[in-house]
Length: 472
Image (cartoon, rainbow, N blue to C red; front, side):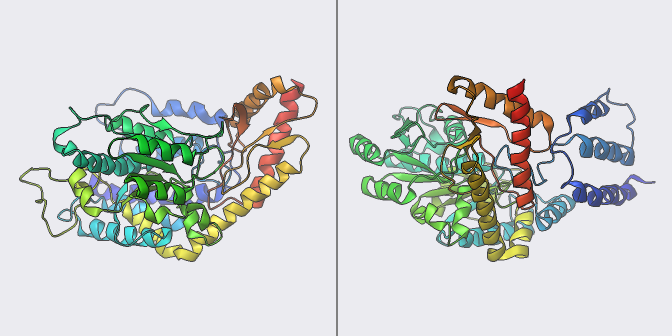
């Protein structure tokens, strides 16, 4: 077979494996550690002549379907990871099939127009003003990088400097203030921007990390010049929220830039029942979220929105290369609005899933997952051997195993071992965290496939493992 003819055959091989794999997700272990020996089939020396397309694809499918962590399934709760809706997954296959270079209108009007459309749809879904600029990114970390790079450019301009062109040399440190909910992805973005990972001034009023608004107000009043506030919509341990509306008031009063990291919590805006949690987000200067969390599109996908679209071009554009479109090109070129140059057309799966399920479908998914979290929280509260450590705000439930006969000093080690056994067991995936100094479980419910039966199984497996671990 000519190599050109193998392209369709290779895709047909994958398509043939898709149905049995996808229909098995409800029954599979989230991770079958016994199958990890298959990983050796990926190894070996690079062959001189190659092993052929179909043989290689078939081997990859055999190893992949056997050893993958099936986070697309309904019982992956360890991190805030959604699955892929059927529309999004098919849209992602289309993305790979067409293989567009999506950064320039010149290379793909299809990708550029699709990205413009989905950004408009997402702003509509999240209740953000249509006037905001936006760009799709690989992740929430890149989205935070985008928003905070715009904040850095804004801050530099207030000091009479173009930091994109000239860097930060000779400037004071950019003041960044946050509550204790600030996520490592925001710190990483600040690290990459040269502002310092640990330069954030954290103002929290308790050991849970709740922001101290009064202390932040005082601190902003003491700063000579503009500052940046980082707010969180959806904290990873409990799903709690900073009071975005109050932070927006502070930003307005002190002339600060408000950046809101809404990696998964921004999706509360899709539901009238939950939108109060993100009240004020429409007043932020930059807002970010993650698509491969609650939007349930394939890895990797994020988005950044910025109140002043022009500052995105100043922060990321003006490449000065004669073979690239000029800065005043009438068509949108998204690689001038964000950190990437080489970009896949990640708008296509987003377009497919938003068009397929609409505003109502995504509202219902957020509310159903909230109901499942409330169900799990209720089970924990009604159980004498489980302890709810924080109120259920959205889709994360923070709790621990606490039998009456185990001393407090032994609970952290017991819960840590339960978390390790959960991962090793594989029926459900839910590891541990540290919350208010306690080792805790914090399952996150954002997968479109997850049902009440999966929540009940999670509790059952935790109890089974806890009983066995306690006895051991």
